[in-house]
Length: 308
Length: 93
Image 1: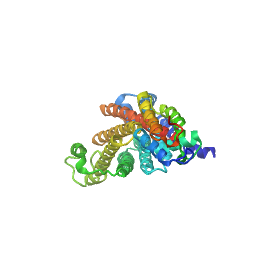
Image 2: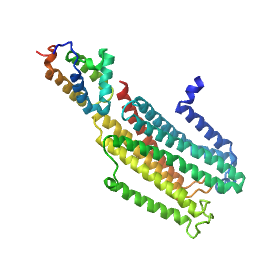
Image 3: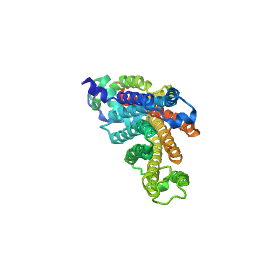
Image 4: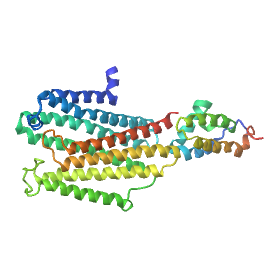
């Protein structure tokens, strides 16, 4: 019974998954390629990897804490007209938070296998790319539905003409993304899989480029809807709390899009590398962390209104 | 109207003022304050209950914000209801 109660707690999963991740970092066989590149012995390799991945635990914690607070608020307003919208929002951020932890855990296992068996390298890259895509795709779709539900409940609708800025931003983002992705597959035929993504070009376009563009578009729309909701909501204190939540959600969505953007325009190599991409990814993760903290604060304030 | 009679219109007025501060949470907030602190159903709120209710609201809202001006503004608007709802006869001069 005690175990069942614990298993419903997000922090139970957080601790279990984080410990699993760090154990894997320490126990998995080191990559010969990385050790040769940076002139490391296995112990140094593991220490370096462990230290580099250590800040992730803090980022994951803020994510799990944030979605847990949002879930608690959603539960407290379950019976109200906004209940379904907030429940969807909490579910979306749950997917988003798990999407920070699960793909990276699977990826390090796949990379370790491909380090021992070079024939598996292509499969490892393909699986990693798809796993990294599926979580935000689901998360952004759910968040978009939920924010749309919350906004349309107020008799408003997201009309494309009303958010030209989003459209312009999306077009610029999309065109630049396509340009940067196609630069890596330039000169390859549609059925050629001899490219950094290890799959035929037509599959890259249909199963990576288009789904990412879709996920980002619905993600940006969701952020815009939440922003509108917080601007137009009634109640000074309610609006302040919702504004905190909406700004946090926007930071998380935009930073996650940035990380995915960076990861897909700089294709995976199948092994760990110390580069500017890694530094930039961590800088974006710090912004995301602040976003999750703002979500927690906003959701806590909203929840307090339902408690006192 | 007698002081002991129910006054759901008064409850609605309190909720309407509260909506300016708590938005969609207003109805639930006032309902809880009346039930938990005045120990009666929200629809049975009387003008004579307002002073006690406002005191509890002041305490509760202070837990939501540090903005004392906002709390004063809110409670002042609620206090106006005690003046503009003299039918109970208990709070009037």
